[in-house]
Amino acid sequence: METGVTCSARAPILPNISSQHPVAFFIPRPISPSSSSSSRNWSVKKTSFLGDSVWVRPKSSSQRVPRRKNTSLGAKCEIGDSLEEFLVKSTKDKGLTRLMVCLGEALRTIAFKVRTASCGGTACVNSFGDEQLAVDLLANKILFEALRYSHFCKYACSEEVPELQDMGGPIEGGFSVAFDPLDGSSIVDTNFTVGTIFGVWPGDKLTGVKGRDQVAAAMGIFGPRTTYVLALKDVPGTHEFLLLDDGKWQHVKDTTEIGEGKIFSPGNLRATSDNPQYAKLIDYYVKEKYTLRYTGGMVPDVNQIIVKEKGIFTNVASESAKAKLRLLFEVAPLGFLVEKAGGYSSDGKQSVLEKVIAGVDDRTQVAYGSMNEIIRFEETLYGSSRLNNMAP
Ligand code: AHG
Ligand code: MN
Ligand code: MN
Picture 1 (cartoon, helix red, strand yellow):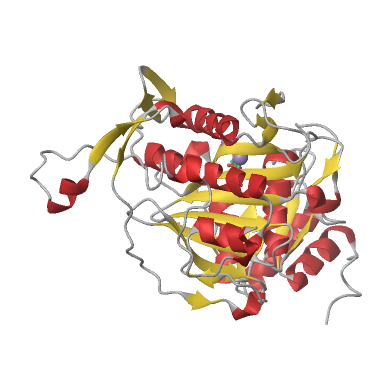
Picture 2: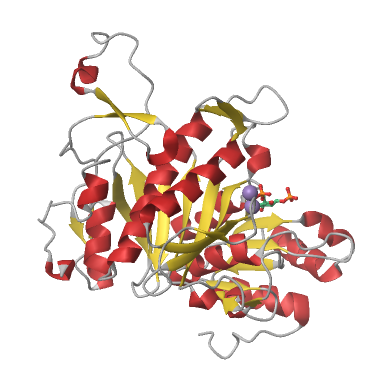
């Protein structure tokens, strides 16, 4: 088994993926073959994966981040590892490894499509073969193709296609995946950071399960940098990978603790008009001089907590401003990422990971943050917090 592989091992673990798409990524054709010295090593390669042609170049050994042992995890993982190396060292589950690598390929493609989308009309569109597709629908299509290609996905569904789609993978040893292909699709045109969210459950169930049952969750973050932030059930921490110029994902950060700090991201503020408890909570943040950091994209707003290792994100509902965020596609996967990072989540009374996902369209209010922030959130909204006994 590969679990004995040391950090110096450089062999690809998924020959059929890595040999076909070792560093394959979408890149504009150079203006002329001699226009750039770096273009000399490029050759075009046609591939059916994700239905587009790609430029490939030979593997590069260049690394931006020097290798550093991650002693806090007590594992063999090192900052500077590739995604594949991280996964080989972290899990014996080859199916899960393959699934996460295939989703990484999809995120890389979506990043390019977002970056090159044309936003002149009513929607941001990008060409895909002969079609012109809104970029969120394109992301949706790319993710379904990647999941089918992985051969380890049984069912998948998305915010765009909520009915379960059979991806052809096995139930035993396979996974079912729920995703929001492009969270923040209304802020693509303003060039804010947007992202993809997905949750991975074992077997063939995406309803009647809890967020706590996920075996992995992740988000792709398409900002000035493209990152892939993931957590695996049996591996401590939440892990950030940076997309490098050569198309590889490189492990750049682990988060294992969320501390206290005065940053707030208040979503659905319109609910304060008829939810006095939420208004009181917002008043507290303002009076205590918290720093407002809110983009209106749940992915960057929640990622902020994981990267800064502090803060609070709230999206509270009221009678007139109902809950909008979906438990299956958005709230549960992000809850998994925050809790694996050492933070807490709440719907006001319990962790969002304890909520049974009864239907694909279930929606909920939510907060993510440090322990004391979640205690304050629950106490202000409902008068008490289940976390009080645990607080230091
Ligand atoms: P989506 O683009 O997938 O529909 O979701 C966007 C979500 C989330 O990212 C954000 O926190 C929330 O919508 C903001 O909602 P409002 O703009 O309605 O406040
Ligand atoms: Mn969304
Ligand atoms: Mn969406």
